[in-house]
View 1 (cartoon, protein in one colour):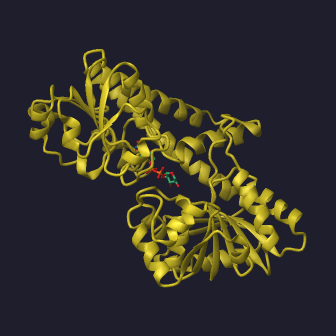
View 2 (cartoon, rainbow, N blue to C red):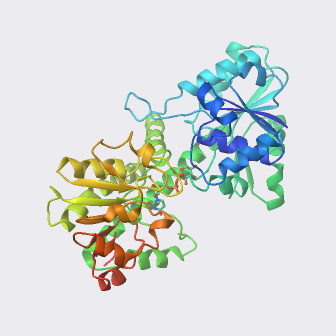
View 3 (tube, helix red, strand yellow):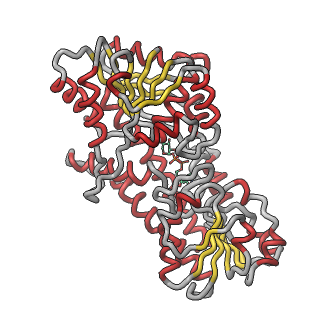
Length: 436
Ligand code: UDX
């Protein structure tokens, strides 16, 4: 099927590439010329494992191409995905900024030719698909089209496997004709018996927010339980394992840490609260999760300060990991961007390492951070080491070497990678999150 993907950000690029891998003919469109030029040369603007190889393969096979020319790519498309950004509004009120979605709808409208299904892939507030439909009608009253919602559930760092082997595909659609087009797009997934949930447009739009909000609540819950564990001498890892084995709870997303970050949870929880408030309701569980998440980051600053004897002034802190999670170079809402400036302000010196995120980190963090080339360099002469992101290469560190390199052997493991007993045996003053 001929498909146009508008937006070559994280979601658009992964979705377009994976759909090409399914065998569809995909044109990815973006307004940013430099980005399209780079993509044409096989340069991928983000780090996502496996994406560069998949892009290059599908480009070489002629199923994937990149252009800035919307006019030329819309008329022949049977389906058009809108996958442009929906950042938190610059007004600072928590609403999602829909400018790019509406601009895309307006532009697409002019070039539609023959029956086309317009599919919202971006995470958008309930009611957006209907607005997209209205905008297209206003701008092209004779256009033959349907609008549908097909939210994405891709995790950064695992986006390709999430797309190729999803838990489910959600389609918000009203016309059977559009439903058939979308089902054809996802046909290759039938072989895997992937559940395909067809529902109303509003349900699909809300499903995405509800899924992310639920996961955010789960993380904030376990973070709070971890904090209680520290007070009562309990171990959150054993506890999480034990409660997670209850099929009703499930073991995933029960890892305590420095708080969730990324491009989705922080933005989507805020946007959901605004949507709900506009309808005269509230979501107090989500409000609490957001508040707990902010508090968790502050708590991590205190944890580090306490381990340094009450003050970080003049102390050198080695930091392992800057991105909001491993296997990405994404720094958006990373706990590092809250925790490290707080330490620097109080006079700490920071030597930081991240396998993929250091370039990106420079525009999110204060300039006085020293970036180093490997984990051991970060530990050299350090008064404490903070493990902030659980990259694989930090999971099997030569701990004896690290201890020798450090000025004082204080290890603050904000991802619970290491075993507390083992660390103490090795001679570290060690703390994790919720473990004794
Ligand atoms: C998330 C959703 O998982 C995905 O379905 C959605 O489409 C986009 O948002 P992503 O933000 O890429 O994906 O990463 P995810 O793996 O969900 O992690 C988000 C944050 O939560 C990270 O900062 C991570 O470190 C944190 N987290 C996750 C925890 O602190 N504990 C956990 O148990 C799980």
